[in-house]
Image (cartoon, rainbow, N blue to C red; front, side, top):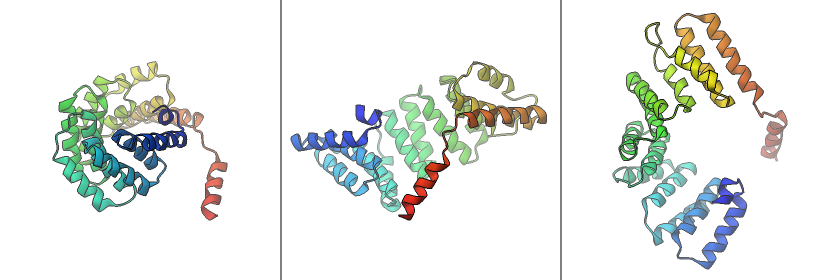
Length: 248
């Protein structure tokens, strides 16, 4: 896991191969190998490894990982079938419901994704990410009031869930009587992280625009854009190197 967290999947995979050679009946070793192979986009090998893990221990986590492999390798029909089977299960871990919800959302199964996020929240209502994901699906489905309430819940649980402020600003037209401008300004004043500031400044710009305060809105938009630009790591040379590799 240190190799995964440290960004060294190649070393991690070498360790997994050694582990699986020494302990071929250790299911979790095969799962870790599949996880790393998927990250490296070696999907056929990832499927073989997770199938071996499932032979040894048919756990829901491994089944879900297999569905993710199928989706990422482009086998949408099989991924959808695998996800449908998992959707009927009641997981013990809230995180598995959340991960399945994300996969279903990616597959275009938005109502089923919403059901999984609801299950995740029932299992563990204190996870702000579940409320945020639920809000994103509700917004996609056109339930503005439900999405705003879910964004509110995410922010209440984690005041640094910065993307939720921006999502909430966009679910409806803000009014003089009902907006979040004062709250946004307070959070901007205490926030130092650039990605968070960008989300907050864009959210403030949107709400000010709704109220017709166009000069203040544009100033906030400029601040957000300037903050983002200062922290961009873009290099045109990187794009040129990628294009050269594709051409080769």
